[in-house]
Image 1 (cartoon, one colour):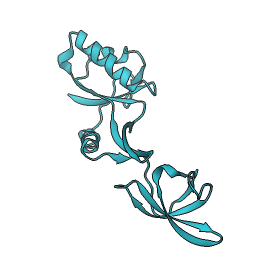
Image 2 (cartoon, rainbow, N blue to C red):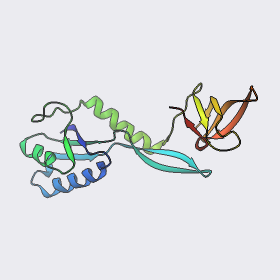
Image 3 (tube, rainbow, N blue to C red):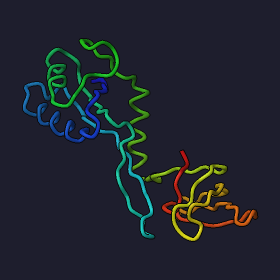
Image 4 (cartoon, rainbow, N blue to C red):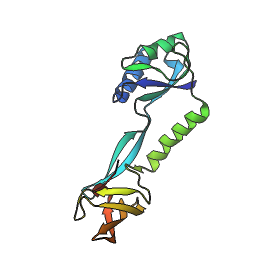
Length: 176
């Protein structure tokens, strides 16, 4: 069995996963299919001083399918509602992804189960806008990031003097 990627309507990935799994189980070719996955990762964000975990798709609009490709299995997948088609190859003969690519995606899935990522990533030297607290509407430069506590050390100019402040992730936003 090889891994294939199908493009689904954005926002319907989980529904496509459920309906595809249902179609596979009702078909005579269930043994030709392996896993059907929506690549997601667990992210952590701070809200109201509490850590909240949520799920984020890291390939929005795509679903991974492990299968033996033949005419019958191709039709089961292609005729599933809200699937636009396979990614790679031609519409009639889709190309599987390499095992190295599949392993990289599967390892990322396994990694996020044990070590959730922060919802937003910040880098030292990045300019942010303070959106809450006494420094609202001030711009600041990131000096240090503490992902354990979900806090940032920013340098903000107050009366033309650089001032160090420590803020939670939820009190700042990235500038476009």
